[in-house]
Length: 203
Image (cartoon, rainbow, N blue to C red; front, side, top):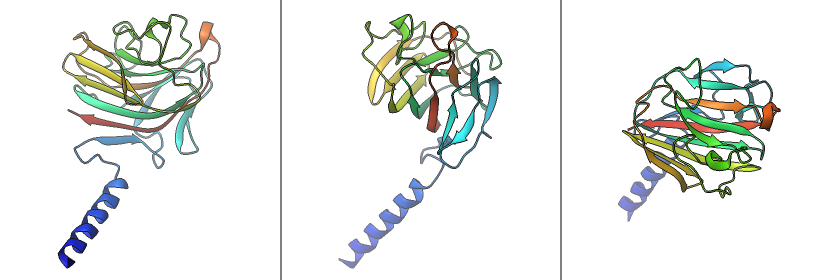
């Protein structure tokens, strides 16, 4: 009985220690959480990135990115984010040119509920893996979790635990990843993007 009590106490203490740790138990790293600023990122563009209410936020500027300082080949990214219905954002990964980021030289897991061409709206991998039309995956007005998995040529996106896109493609093999604040429809200022927690785990 006493044995069992000490075992339970040890497990509770271990769980508490892991919960407060910025490193995943299996080698992943937290790049954004309530305690981290922008030190883990390079900025590209003029978006007004800042720390606000425990998140990294952008809501003005012509557009910009936070680019990871490290490159990755095979990995899983999990990101908690808040977007408005008219927010244009996404996770760009395996960037071949981290100074000039677009869907032609990287992959983009898209966040844009009202994208003018809904083929690659929220949940899609732009130019590579479409979502249903009319769109069925929505992110606007709430906190969401996006998971991006790249393992060899197999690319998978999940939104709130639901697989939204998967494709095999080997065009881009490795590189940094980036978080986007983009212009809205016809270049108008879109809604804000808030990143509350972003983790990456190499595979």
